[in-house]
Each structure stands twice: as structure tokens, then as C-alpha cells.
Image 1 (cartoon, rainbow, N blue to C red):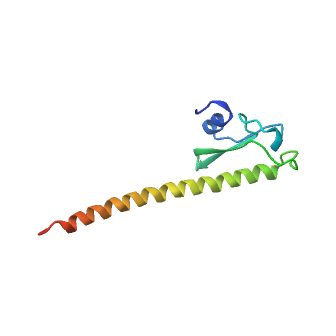
Image 2 (cartoon, rainbow, N blue to C red):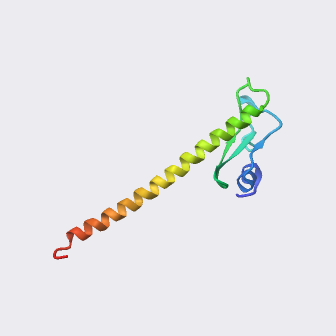
Image 3 (cartoon, rainbow, N blue to C red):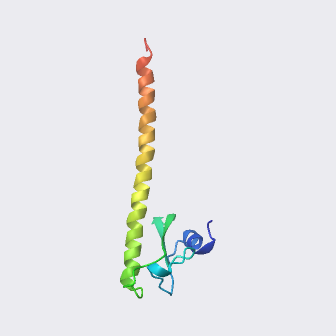
Length: 109
């Protein structure tokens, strides 16, 4: 739910979350993610990406990690938004084509 837990808070506030502790593959906490990044189109949050573990080679977050996660989230949000727009336009096109077919079937008009 919006505003509940880490993911809900990130969705509500539109701000990323980075845990202070790193959890690796063997010690995954299934409830609390270690990184949550909002998926935003302009300032509107359309979802959240949550990471629960990393490989053992990763011992700490850097500024590059933060930028990489935000870049990934931006691309994912754009892809999701574009997919929604495409689906909406396909539905409208199908409706218009159906109306045109009905008009063609009416004799004398």
C-alpha cells in the first residue's frame, strides 16, 4: 500500500532508498529491500524497482551505483509508459476500424 513499508514510502515520496547494510545472495531478506528506486515519468511515480540482494563482490554502494540505478529506473519507466500509450492507441484504432466496418456494411448510406 502507498506509504506503507519501504516500497510504499518510496512510491509515495518519489525518493530512492539505499540500505546501509549490504545483503548478499545467501542472506536475502524477503521483506526488506536494500535498494528501492521510484519509476517516474516527470514527477509522477508509476512504480518502484526493488533489489533484495547483490553478489558477494559488492561490498558497498558508490555514487556511480546510485546514478546507475536511477538511469535504469528512468529507462524502465519510459518503456512502461510507452507500452501503455501503445496499448491505448491500439485499442482506439481497433474501435475506429470497427466503426468504419459498420459504416461500410450499411447499404444506401
